[in-house]
Amino acid sequence: MLQSNDILTFQKFYLDLEPLDRDTLHLCGNLLSKSGAAGGEAEALLRRALSVNGSHVQCLCDYGDLLESAGRNLEAEDKYLRALQARPDSEGAMLRCKNSQKFSIH
Image 1 (spheres, rainbow, N blue to C red):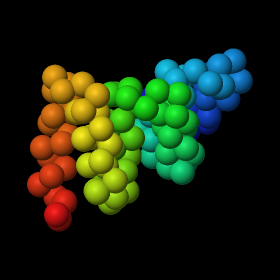
Image 2 (cartoon, rainbow, N blue to C red; image 1 turned 90 degrees about the horizontal axis):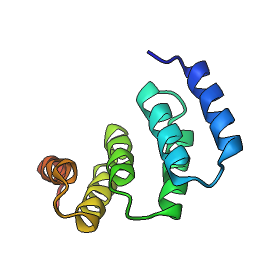
Image 3 (cartoon, rainbow, N blue to C red; image 1 turned 90 degrees about the vertical axis):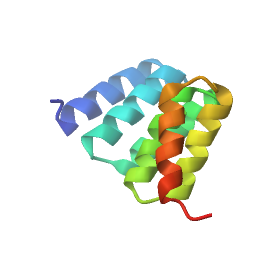
Image 4 (tube, rainbow, N blue to C red; image 1 turned 135 degrees about the vertical axis):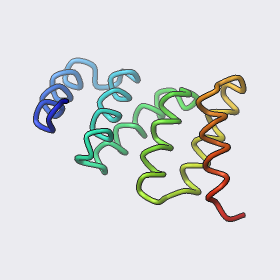
């Protein structure tokens, strides 16, 4: 398993090479999110990735997962719904939407 220092080294190297590349931003944000370190930085990277392409389904789902893990369920549900709107046949987005709606209060 990657350690936080490995992730930060990877992130710095690739973001220096490709600071506006959506996939690089998404990958670095997702790695930080999954490592449990630097949640604010992970969120910022995922937001930057979505500013490049706001309909990137996997990035929307991963951002939603990060928000959900922080207890921000309504914001997470919004990201899942946006992913589903971008690609209605996305099984990952459908499942996340369905699961998130069980916990949200309308």
